[in-house]
Length: 133
Image (tube, rainbow, N blue to C red; front, side, top):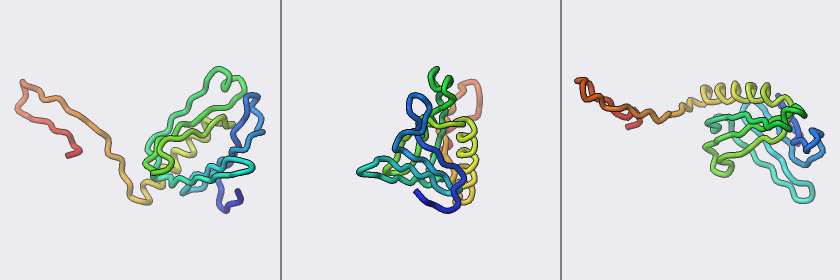
């Protein structure tokens, strides 16, 4: 995976924390790339503005070997929800990815609509409604 303007790259780590796997990750300011396979390979690309949520998880073993997994929820058609598995410096990588996602969303004028439901207060004269309608 040879790309220009890559700001972060890593490999999925094995159970010992060593990068002896065939999954590679790369990030530039607009896209996240995931390449898998050795004999038959697949390369996926996700535009950062399509990522809607990031979650970092670290089980006990990952904390011992200092890796983590970033779960990404996405509006991308082919890569709806995916994981960036067993990477080094997972917390810093999540923050970097989060900052680039926000920057890409602003640049592309993509705004998330969060579902907010309001209860009607019977004692109040004000009626609340779902802001998504």
